[in-house]
Image 1 (tube, helix red, strand yellow):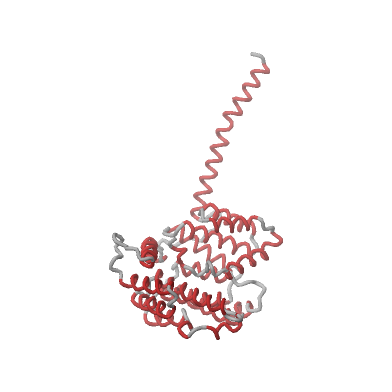
Image 2 (cartoon, one colour):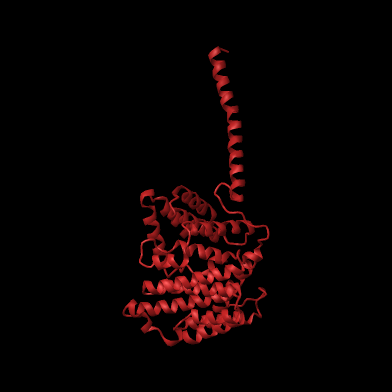
Length: 357
């Protein structure tokens, strides 16, 4: 063997075996990153106290909520729910009757049946969500048929006036649980989505944030309320006339959105229980918060995590759009994106079914 051949063979051998420590280092690095990531160190997730459980976080019944939502849809469609354990669930059956009535365009009687069902189980997020979404759909239909958004209230039939807030306020007074309070806060956000005036949106937005604060004062790690409060800080556009009043009342810190949403993600990772779609949306929202707060690289890290968390087509498309944004127009593009999301009543951001889908 010539010296050149030996040298060549040695080089190939060195190259081949030299890859081993490089690959090992890469694997080790990724492993350490994964450990740090799950603990929150690399991406600065806040620590979660040891006493936080699926019960305190309010996600212990996600599986049951999923089954109840499926059973509710089956009942509405006239199918049996034998073998589900929900055959004798009278509130669920009553809610199904109401939803079926709504499909027959019996608005007033349909809502009354769902209202009666919810009164029997005021903590039930599935029935409560069904009620709010039904009201939202009926009010949206009224809005579409009205001559002008500014005269929206004039077109509302009497049975829709003040709903869903009026019903959920009554239930919360009678049964002041975190679930009832949270549902009422979401009803106020529904008002934000539907209000024709900026003043109306301010009043409704502040009412929702006040209720979320009230719920969290009693249950500081109630995950749905933490996430919703973070989105409440994130969604108000930075350049509209109601922001001074909003800031004067709430006095949020500049990083209020990312702090709340980071805690939301941290608790979700600690206790589990949510759907992949929910995990993906939490990561997307946290990335949006960092983008709005002037941290584009951290924002893109969380958008990447959102992309990897779920195969939901709408979520993946939302991430792809964000990848096209440049740093110099990031905030403008983000605010346009989130304003469009708030206006999309085909997929209301207050629809809690994301929790259990």
